[in-house]
Length: 314
Image (cartoon, rainbow, N blue to C red):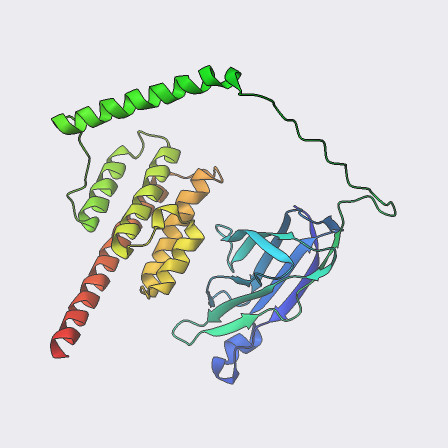
């Protein structure tokens, strides 16, 4: 991936941020591809955080206007191992023009300090051209006359009758099994925490004996199921980025959100990036997932007790 256009934006950390931040200010370096692109092309964007190593960075947010000229097809993904963090995302332009990128915003703070916003105010532009040939007037292709038929389409009777009859037979068989009690459903009788811990125990026992891809597939699926049961949200259909947004929306502790990001980063790097990972790293991810589940279970239990006490007092 080749990037040449760049812009560096200093973060406004305020007068109270201290001398360390003043000497090494937080910055965002935004890189876009060289040359023009066309409407509908996928445009990879890279955003690199710059600043002191002791700074703690939040997630990168991209403020895409629903009515604007950009559509985000891949949300920001933090590159594993990059410190300070580096994000990659993919946008698609919908207009022919020199388009300015959407607003890029993140937060940063010193350990123990308050978080401050770092917003890119001078993001680069991308030259977007048309998919049509330049300088030529292109006439639209004329519509073809509709293909019509006359009379009853007997040739479709037999092909359509076969799947319909098969579906009717299958439905009748299923109804008979329901009446005779032959059907069964697998329903988890374990609490969410007990279920995820049992899964983590099984995965831990398979370390070194099964491929890392299979371990990470089941780890990612198990975490999504646990979060779905604990939040009553469709976490099973969410991306890792959407899971972090969900955790922030529901007010989960920062330690839980950070652990979730680290666990899913390990799983995704193996599942999608095919990055090598050793047994120690996988075991660390399993242990972190267990701590995450226990901490979230404790936080939700405390919230439930607080809500019950408030209702009783009211």
